[in-house]
Length: 458
Ligand SMILES: Cc1ncc(COP(=O)(O)O)c(C=O)c1O
Image (cartoon, rainbow, N blue to C red; front, side, top):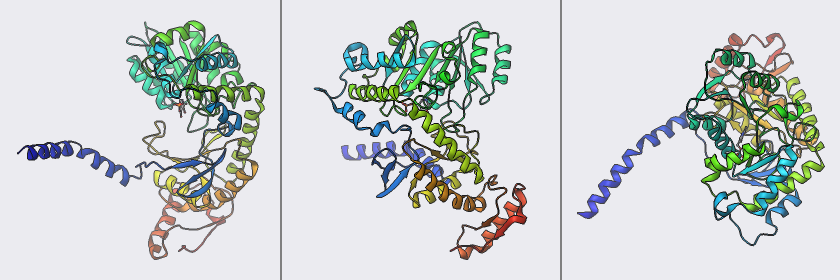
């Protein structure tokens, strides 16, 4: 009897979760189901996935610091104790945390800094400490998910403004009769499109309305600015930005996040930022690694400048091949192909050729709208000119394929004389013809007089 009771409970428990199975099937059908893949890192720009060695164009280790022997050694050095054992206010704040925070403040040129367990936690912690009910947040519509989640958790009113549009923000702010605090928050370099926020204009609006300005430099730290502090440094607006957020897990080759600013801001976060207060402290070993990486970056800021130069060259080459790179002006270079299926196919084709270039699709990437799927190329400085040349050679081929394959209006490869090949099975010639016809009808950017239409492939 007892046995049947247990089993009926199990059946009930199972059926209450059936909606998940159905939702997963739907995601799969829409080519949006994610699966974890084991990515074994083999060095700065090499990895192994599914037994295959690849050149890695999907890493955020922009300066190759995660693979620097000095950084690796620092992560393992001088530890009698692994793990943090307590939250920072209770006992988890070690000399490694203190040293890293001081070094970050020195690097950022601010009075103080605070280390969080992740960049995500830094954004959520900072926003929820700064605004609440009765306050207003102005947030770029393509801000990173961690900013958006911080906004939502804060319970302040959220006024999203169109991506990068300071004029629209100005109108929004002028209209508002706000009595509470105001916060403008933005990524400095957008993580998916690789474009920069209009920071100077945002600083002007913050000044004008007495608003706080918070800038997340996650993808710009180490890459932009004379000393590598990011786009606020590059644009000489550091003094006008009240809260600067960064992560240790991209160019700084470790893991964790930080906030830098005036001393009282940091003291406030120590008291109020819930992800800081109520979570076990970031591991000391990760702090040691980040501190070493920071020393390298401070001594060699040219690493970032070299990365920018290489990224500019790669963008130029990809443009000349006709790829749609969106507004990218950085080392984050999206290949915009406009559909999840196409993005996956392109990523897979590159995988076959020995490159790891992840397909970025909704919904896990908060900022990618359903009609705007990317294949995202991230160029790391350690990926030398040779790697960049190799991938552009392959992409030259893939561009031709992608033009005729799938649902999107190509938008790239408009001028170059080319051979068009259709990526469908030979026995599906009807579909090949139909696809070609559709593209002819829909895409007036291709000069078809220059196009040599080849035979369908096997
Ligand atoms: C703009 C931005 N902010 C914050 C984060 C979160 O940083 P972390 O990965 O250290 O949690 C990311 C990570 O991708 C990001 O792109």
